[in-house]
Image (cartoon, rainbow, N blue to C red; front, top):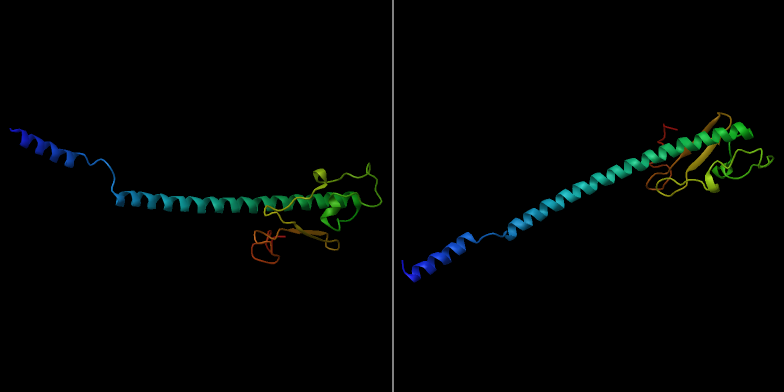
Length: 150
């Protein structure tokens, strides 16, 4: 074997055997798959967070209703507004009152940072508490609890 044949064989083997990288098409395909997976993960995480917010709002609504019943047992009527749960009612001294029913005199906000909507019907002995939901608009489909749940 002469020198020229050795150089040519060495050069050809280097060209054939040195392909250790990825083509642009392969890289683009992998990147596209990663983007799709990230999108699916983000959508799932958003739905999970939304469901948690709805559960938190339902829990707080039940808590507010229970506090309104406790208020009625002590004062004799439901609070006129939710603010009454944190302010001393007229006719009672601080030592006679079991409130404020929320720490630091601050009412909770719903998970979307809006006030809860409250009303009471003394005649029917019912308390109604709702959250306007993620859109913050009253009377829409995302209100919590829904129309028939209160």
